[in-house]
Length: 286
Image (cartoon, rainbow, N blue to C red; front, side, top):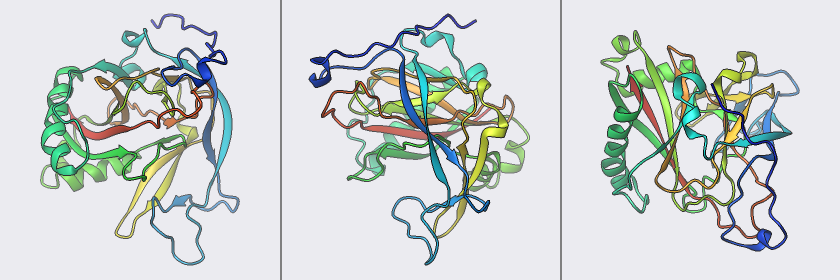
C-alpha cells in the first residue's frame, strides 16, 4: 500500500529564487496542457517538428486546455511504485560509458546495450529487450521539452512498431506479452527546471485518451493526447544522471499506459540551466 505523501508545498524564499544551485522539491501546483478537441469535430492531427503541412492545413488542428494540477514529489518514496501497478518505476543505475550523447554512432552501440542489460535485470518478466528509438533534448536547439500531456503510442501503433522492427517474428511475438517502455534520464542533472510529470496509470480512464495522427512525409503514426480527468500526477525532483525513470507507454497484458509531460515549475530559479535529457523507447517481450 502506498504511504501517505507529503502535501505541503515547499516554496523557495526570495534568495533561493536566484540561487542557480537551488533544486525545487516537494509537491507543487503547476499548469499541465491537456487536450482540447478540434472545434469542427474532425479527427485530431499534427505535423511534428519542422514538417510543414500541405497548403491550407494548420500544423495541428486541436488545442490545449491549461489546467493547474497538484504534482506530488516521489523523492524518498521510490519503492512504493512499480510498473505493473502504476505503469512507472524509479531506479538507480550505474554510470554510463556513453557520456556525450551527441550522435547515433555512439548512442546505439554503447547506451542501447547498457539499457538492454539493465532492463532485463530490473523489469519483472522481461525475457527479451530491444531498444528501437531515442530522443535527445535539446538537439542543436531543436526538440525542447514537450509541454503537452501525451502517451507515445496507441495500442495499434505499438503493434505496428513490432511489425516494423521484427517483421518475421511479429505474428508470434504479438500472441504474448508485449510492452513499450520509455527510459528517461537527464544529461545535466540534477534537474532544475522543466521536470517531467507522469500520471499513475491506474488513475487514468480510457475515456480521457484520444488518438492523434502524427503526419510525417512518408508515414502516419498514432500517439495519444489526454483530456483532463482525475489522474494522480507525480514527478521525481532533482533527478541526476544515474537515475532512470521507466514509463510504460503500452502493455498488452496489464494495460499500463502513462500520460506524461514536461511542466514549468514556478519555483525554478530565474535563469535556470535548460534541462537536457535522453529518452529511449524499448520493446520488452515477456
